[in-house]
Length: 276
Image 1: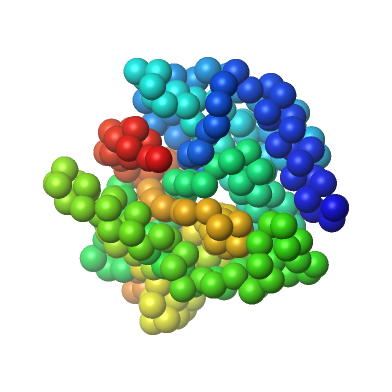
Image 2: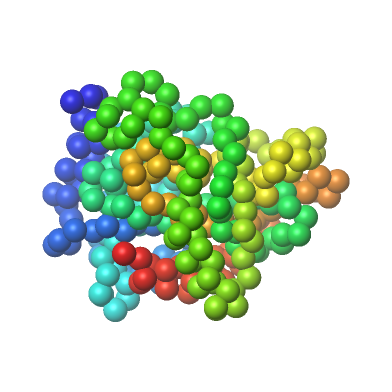
């Protein structure tokens, strides 16, 4: 057993040993810390990331949580990972992707990732919601570099369909049926945490990106490697359109994100209930 696999099993065994659930859980949500839509679910139990051995720790000292959750009617059990492990916080890529492999070890096969992003596409608006169908990795690294454990996934995973096209199309159809405005998007992954220059924003848009963030890409690569299905949404909190670039205060960014979260909350609840 490789050291990576051993660490995955340590985390998964701890989570299983502390689980209030009976039976298999095959669905999870990974999100930024403390989104408003957590209130939409029954929180059965929480474990601090820092209590899960050996690498399941939180970024920025914020204290992320592994949550055992249920839909409010109690009919569906699922996991919520409340907080991303961000590369810019100093984690190695494999550490940032570690929670994904732990979910896979637990039997989870379908994951919705929720991230915060800035938008490069001038047709988008702050407070909006993007549905990701592809990404560009400009983070200069990825979680698969180094020794490959064949029990986790193939050495050269196929990234031609990273955001499961069938699931994406089903979600998009549901959103259109609900008359929910969303932005189909190519996500650009960069390291952060500094904001982007105007020249960078112009370049990123010219290479085909619609939105930009710091968390999603390594998680998605790990999911593809592990044979899991991924759907991804981004709350659009800031404008990054070249020639319109302005400084934004954290308070305004948080307000924009909160607007997106409020609109998105009932949609996510429905997707959680429908997820297999």
